[in-house]
Image (cartoon, rainbow, N blue to C red; front, top):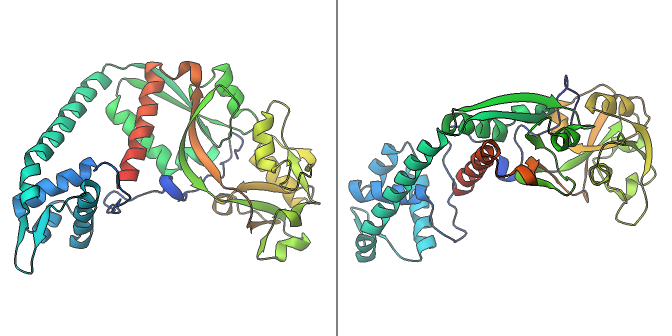
Length: 335
């Protein structure tokens, strides 16, 4: 959910799933689920072919030797061939590894050429890009990463950032006040989404609510509670998702006060007027007197996403930030 322009939205600093933040030199996971080899893994093999020593190859790339070895094993898994023969005293390429080496070099060279050509093209993309962020989405690792990539690869784009509340963030996009929004889905038809991160939702209750002493809850336990409502301009699909309306048993939610932003929501909860469902990151971003956050075991998760109008998806500046988002996701799925 979102916040007013002066508040911060409950978006997790360390969201679960694909959008988890990574430090600059954090080493990648093995990625052994099959599929095509990643460019990263191909580059590792080329370094190993030069060094013929796992320790020296890992040191060249600022990796630990176990992490380097796992990536080579993952590459073998993805290619379904054995590339390395390793004994206690030596490392050698297998016959297959030697045979594939020219093709691997060619693939890496082609990728480098592609990046250079894309960089030359990116430098020609110019224009203004108005980006809306829903509260703390501007501070999230995936948002910062995407904006950094956009700046690095498309220096001709003039980025303008604005903070939106949850009452009007989708309206601002539909009206054209902003070109894209770092948002919290769902969204109505006509809006394209690129999911960036996933995390659980929690319930936000008054601290003196009898259920607030429980370690965790179910939706059934919250069936008689009143929940905050949203202004009329909020798409119903969005309001109903965040209120879980109707509940799994078909019961409609009892709505209470209308809240346009996060601070109004928290005040309504603290005053005992209603409850609300929020991303789990609200625990970190919105600690408030009189408010308690609890896990709900059967509550579906929430996602963070980059949103744009489908009719504008191929505008050069929007295509550029969509590409930056895809690059972010590709990097983190390969890593």
